[in-house]
Image 1 (cartoon, rainbow, N blue to C red):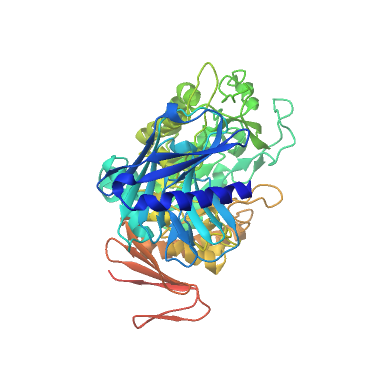
Image 2 (image 1 turned 120 degrees about the vertical axis):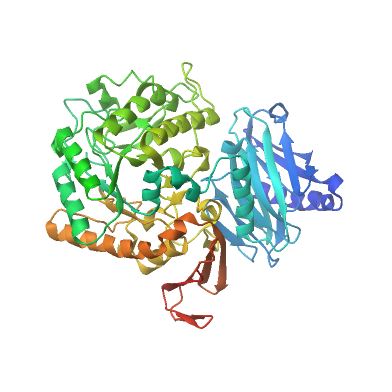
Amino acid sequence: MIKQHFVFLALSILMLGSATSRAADLAARIFYTFMDDSTEWRTVPLRQEGSVHYLNIPKNDIPKNVKYAEIHHPFATATAGDGGFYVFSDGMYGEFKARIDGHYRNSRISMPMFGVKTPKAAMTVIATGMRYYLFQMARVADNKYTVFPRLELHGDDACDDLKIEFHQLGRDATYADMARTYRQFQLQRKLIRPLRDRVKENPGLKYAAEAMEVRVRMGWKPMPTSVEEQNAENEPPMKVAVSFDRFQQIVAEFKKQGVDKAEFCLVGWNIGGHDGRFPQLFPVDERLGGEAKLRAAIKKTQQEGYQIVCHTCNYDIYSVSRIAGLWDDGRDVIRLKDGSMARQKPPLSGGVAYLACPQRMYERFARDDHRKIRDLGFRGAHYIDVFSIITPMACYSPEHPLTKEGYAEWARKIMGDAQSVFGGVASEGGFDHCLPHLDYALYVSIHYDPDKPLPSLVDRHVPFWQLVYSGYILSTPFSRATNYTIKKPFTQLKMIEFAGRPLYYFYSNYREGNRAWMGVEDLRCDTDEELAESVRAVKRGFDEFERLKHLQYETMEGHDQIAENVFKTSFSDGTAIVTNYRATDFDYNGRKVKSMSYIVVGK
């Protein structure tokens, strides 16, 4: 298969090189690999309007039984040593330098776009048809690079026309320019509005924009579980980490230490705790104190000047919900092509997590649940788990079939309803199929780990998503930035470089065996001493955010490496943050930037 890739690369260079001579001759090459591993290639002309090249292949012209297809644009090739780079929607940035043969595939398509700059051109590449089936690839062979989208069908028929736009930029374009092109594309589609404008009509969103997010995991059953199909007789006991009374003590400690603003999010307040019995939420779990004490805690929190929301999930469901009569013999579950029920592996706290059809969740549960939750008193950026950190799935149920776009539409309906009920919506990631109903991305990246080496074709992780959406959507840059003030200095500094909204989490690390995607460092409150120490860590972040929170309203306009291991992040109001990752101090226009520290310059 590797040899086959090298052949594709050679054909791409030889056949596409001549296409650069005249715009009228401009064409892409499509390299098809079929399910039996046979291959063929086709030439497809590109239509040019102004500075944009358009690729459009009608779905009926896409062959049957395609495993995947590579779409090679003639300008997206380079040789090691050429000036230039690629940058994918996950923020992975690579330059065209001498490397061992290999490839990088981005399957986490938070935005259906990427950027590439070669000696031939700089482009922002945007998928507008079949976006959920297109992944982003960079390959090097014999020091020859190709950067391309790859259509992955795995034998399915195309459900839409394949449409890709190649926006040509100036030869000096940066990845900030590429991001700005996509931001303008989204503005023209009216999918985003500046946060500064939206908060004028939404006080809850304004509060969230100027406050840290503080999540409190209250209760959970063992994770991983040994009971895959749970019922009233075998359901494991729930651990109570934070009762509603104890939560009020957390709020009191915040007030005592001068953390005057925070949006609290209660996780696992529902029956069975976190991932306990979804889609069942009610009754409020008595082991935490029951509904009366929850209402009292919400009211007290708001009286102290804080905003408070809660965590729900419409992504997966558990058969244990049959205790409340909500398990409808699996009729709410997404069906695979073979008719089996889609499931998440491994099982979660509630047992096997069957993947839920969002249409059924919207029609049967979400709308009523939102209003019941509002009646408890919650207001703010209500949190709905998972939707914005996954690629939508197809459902093959004969009762409620959905394409991937259909899945996205119903997910947006759920989020839109919550947005209208609570005043805002948060979800787990920044995948922009959830627009316009996403106000806060809990973390833009769940896979970036600052403590681990980058992929072999990647030189650094850059705030590409933030260059598009800062000033429009609140965000924390990556999952391991959770509780950032108790993390290593590199993580702390990366949080500032990316201008993140601080995210704190009591009991983020709850899975057995330290299987902690937010980091093993944690906030706990088992004792009053632990609580006080945890809030001291939050206070450090609060004080820092108070100095920087105005940047949540600004667009990120530039991000540059101004010296080795020194970066400058620039904002629309003229402010800039200079971050120094060196072991020594750095002089920036006469100002000292200490080692592993930063300065704020400009306005």
